[in-house]
Image (cartoon, rainbow, N blue to C red; front, side, top):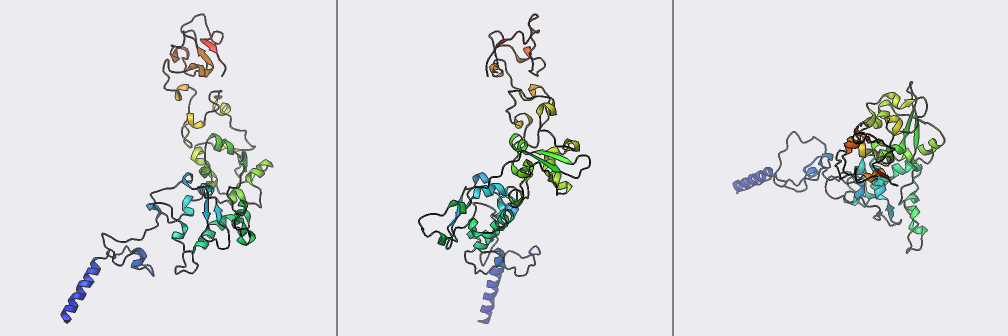
Length: 382
C-alpha cells in the first residue's frame, strides 16, 4: 500500500512539473511574483501557456487615429449624484497628438478594439490592488491635471451637473456644463521671438504660412506640450501678446528651440532667421527670384516642391513639373490664349524654345512676326 502511494505521488508531481514552462534566469526576481502574475490557469503548458496580455508598446499592431474616434462619449458609469458627462472625445484625441497620442489615456490597450476604462479599473473604491486606481480615480487623474493648468480651478461643475440642481429629471442640464467644443484659439499670424543670439536677437515666425501654405499640422512643431501652452486663463496668449506688439521671450535651451525648425531648416544659415528687426512676410518673387503668376499663386507648395518637410529646390523651367505635355493634348486656352487652327497642332518647343513658357518666339516660322504684337490666336477672359 505504501509503495502504491509513493508511485502515485511521483506520477502526479512529474505530470505537474512537465506541464510547466521551465523557470530560468530570465524570470525577474521580484518580490511577490507568482505564476498567477503571468498565467491565468493553474497548469499552463507549452501548447497553452495561458499568458496574461502583456502591455508592451512593441506589441501594438493597430494604431487608431483621431479621425476614427467618436466625436462625443457619454460617461455615465458614476452618475448617482451627477448627470452624465458629455466628453468631447475627438477634440481631445486631436490635441493628444502633441503629447503622446491615444496612449496617454488608453494605456495598456495594445491590440484590437479600444477597451472601456472599466475593463481594467474597478467601479468600487474598495479593491485589493491599490496600485491600480479605481474608475473614479482613473477618470480624474486623466482630466484634472490639464484642467488645473489652464483654468487654475478644479470646480466639479466645469464637467459635472448636480442632479439636485435640476429637480426636473426629464430635462437635461445646460450643455455648457459639459464641454462639447474645444475652446477656440485664434491662430496667430506672426510671432516674433526674442533670443540671446548676439548677431540677431529677433526671429520672426509666420504661423499662418506654416499651417495654411506649407500644410504643417500642430504636432509637427508642438510636441510634449500641455494645454497650458495656449489656454492659461491667467496670462496673455501668444496671439494676444503678438497683437499688442510684444515679443515672446524664448526660455528653452538651444537644442529645444531649434528642434522643431531643423526638420526643414537644418542647412539654412543662422542669418536667414536671426535678424535685428522683424522680417517681412515670405514673398516668392523676392526669396526665389520667380514671381508666381495667376496660374500658380493658388497652388499648394507641395504641388511643385514635393512633400512637407522635404521640399525640393526647382529652377524656373516649367518642365520641372510639366513633363507630360503632348501635342494636341494640352488645352492652351487655360493660359488665356486660345490657339487658332494654324497653331493648334504646333509642338510646345516650336514657340517656347527655352521651356520657361514665359514668352513665345515666332521667328522659327515667321520672319515678319513677333509676340505680343502678333498672336497665334485670340485672348480670352479667364
